Length: 192
Length: 204
Image (cartoon, rainbow over all chains, first blue to last red; front, top):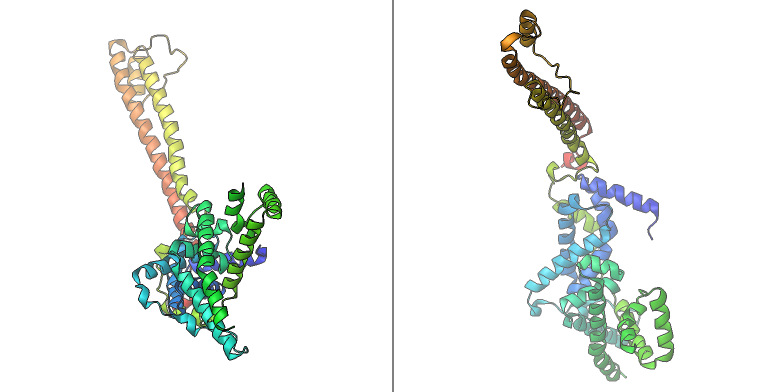
């Protein structure tokens, strides 16, 4: 639970930003950018696109901020904007333009070359499996695993009933389990 | 029972079960190896997702600085309404509504008085004192005496709409004055309370 003073501070920043104070909005952006960009990245799988989508989300947030009710959670509100913006782009984007950026990610460089290779492939498999999920299931999974939202908050962000959140999460994790189970074992055997 | 509990494994894993449900799940897991295995696998998937490294994103400070350059200017029309500001604007409507209720009662009373004067109500409204008179009616009455002769009923008929008209005009003027005073006060209040231009915007 957020400290009351932090909440007051945030409410003050929101009110200032609502009245056009860019410095206050910049402070809010600095607070929520890491979470937003992380969630968006896990949705789209591209770092560049994730940063662009985060920018788009905060831009939309700035324009819509006057209609934001300070009683609501700004984080969840921004997540909602970011998820919707990203899903819109992903729907328009053809699958083959999604870069395999998993290979460009940064596994532990201190590990040996073989371990690094395994880690890279593991991450790549994970990314592929994530993108094999339907958007709706992936959104729920990402908000839970990377956004750290409760089921109730996810329901609020995605505007779906909490039962739908639970069923989509069940589907997503079980599907990932099926997709990863054989492939990860195969990977381990190849390098054994 | 088993399928019901199985459907709640993810909720249990995420710490979203409470109370009786949580207790039921713990009891079930203690006796169901299949569910324990499935829970373990779900936890592995979750751990795998959590362990996946993030790339190096643009630092928050630089992102915020870049974003600030692209933010469009918002017009003052976009400002959120102040809490309770709607109530301020509803006050004149409330005053008018109250005033119209008073006027309606007054008009009805005048109508009853007129009916009494013209004899439409007979003795039924004796309790009313229909003593309202315009200046000309008082003057005519004083010239011809209070009993007024044969012209008295006709004069009374003319007097009643005049009294009503004067009263309505009087009421309207009062309403207009009250509303005018209120709007003047509200305008002054708004002028002093309006948001000042933002420093950043004035600097750009």
